[in-house]
Image 1 (cartoon, rainbow, N blue to C red):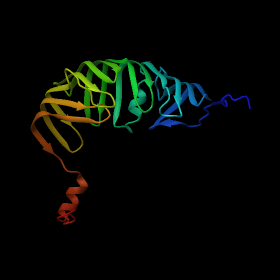
Image 2: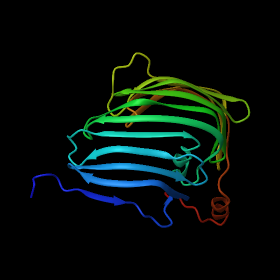
Image 3: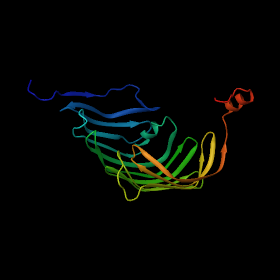
Amino acid sequence: LSGESPLIRSSLTLESATLGDQPLRFERDSVVVKNQALRLDLALRCGQSDEFVVIKGAVPFDPASDLNLQVESHGDALNALAALSGGNIKIQSGSSDLRLILRGSLNQPVANGFAVVSDGNITVGEQSVSRINAAMLFDFDRVELQRLEARVGSEGTLRGEGSIGLFQEQQVESPLTFALTKTKIRQTIVRFQADGTLIVKGALARPLIGGELTLSDGVITPRTGVLARARQGGLRAGL
């Protein structure tokens, strides 16, 4: 009656909430609907993480209206990202710092902030990636990878640097580039060594990947069930 926007206050009460296969717990759980926007003040922790991911700010219902959202985490809080992989990525150790501010609109968002990873050790499927050190800047409409260094397997190396558009392709002086040296890739049915360079253009949301890789020492090991069906004549052309 007063002409002001209706106000709805709520808090999230979730029982047995999970992110991927990890339990999700809330330290702060404020959700307010005010002035045609969803105003959030959340602090959540995933799995065995000691630190929280903090999400705070306003997300408008109108995609053309102002967006103002902050995401911040430290220590092991980004373990939450591994939970989204469905168990394919496991984090053994390392720390990270993330501070990200999203503004603009939902139609044309811009980002400012940074992400830093220190002494990370993870596995991706059967592949070990260790000694991960990286620094990334979010600069309005683009992302700049200032440094990426990692050990892949026992002696392979991965290095990366360069820039790429965030949501749309941007003109950049140095495109996002990754160099692989003696990188032994190991997954369930295939193993090989990769050497070369990958160049990523376009936008982070729609990447275009090019470059040149040399593959060597490759081994393909079919699954046991496939071999058994082949011996029994269960595989036919076209299947």
